[in-house]
Length: 391
Image (cartoon, rainbow, N blue to C red; front, top):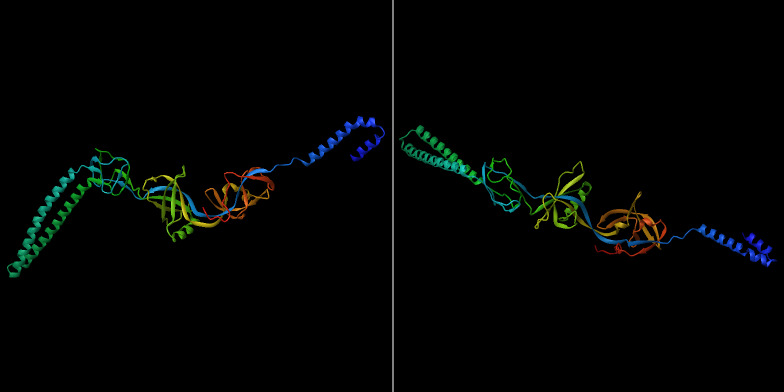
């Protein structure tokens, strides 16, 4: 190109009017050459705007998350101990009942008659037994004076013993009849919440057959859940240091339904699921926990001090595992990390990062590894500060 331009200037040096005629062509050549050089370089990419956070140190609770089921501490099926006609239902469906509160009344008339008959038989047996004892005492005196034979004395002693046994049998009949009369009034054996009356007034029931109602103990109450068998040793070890707190959370609203304590660990591991069943006991004074309800469970084992954390939004799951974009001097580089667990919106980093390093929490899809970025503040920033100890 340079040779061509020199030739033009030399050839036109003696003809000014010719130079003026070829000047537009010369400028066009310069313009085309400049454009081709710029196209070779390509467009300059601006820095990608991103939101960042700083990896920091915090004290993070050690927690086990699970799905639990609310279970009553005690559930009683109310069954009649005697048969007969239901003449009264003395509670409202769903009412809270107390121990010994009357729930149902069975017609006691047949049992009153049986009781009276048994009491009459008892009176006759008492009379017979008393007479036999008197006869035995009289013959004891006669034997001492030599006026009666030993065979007669033995006979009266045997008769007295038989009458005494008969008396005991009649007394047992009276006790049995009295129990039946008492059982005609069906009472609650526990404090709890009653369900609907299954059998209504006027129905005939048989002893120990129909379920009249179900009463569930609500205060306190259990929440049953399972944890992986590999965590069993950690849970048992932590329990030696004191009771472990358990929180029940509404799965939809994330609202806490109450706090309790771990009270039971099953003695076997389920072979099918490799899980261990556990139960926590809750006071449940407000009855927020209802039998049969599913809840999220959070078992707190302790605290992990000096945990390195970043917002979970910074962690990208790739083919090779977890990764984060680390920003230094305006350049973002992709780095593999090991995440031990998550706590709320934070991820606890076991390795791959150091406290104080800056990571990208939003805008990762537009970043080319090694490309320039323009950090900007956002709601995901600020992050935990290095050296911090608060939660």
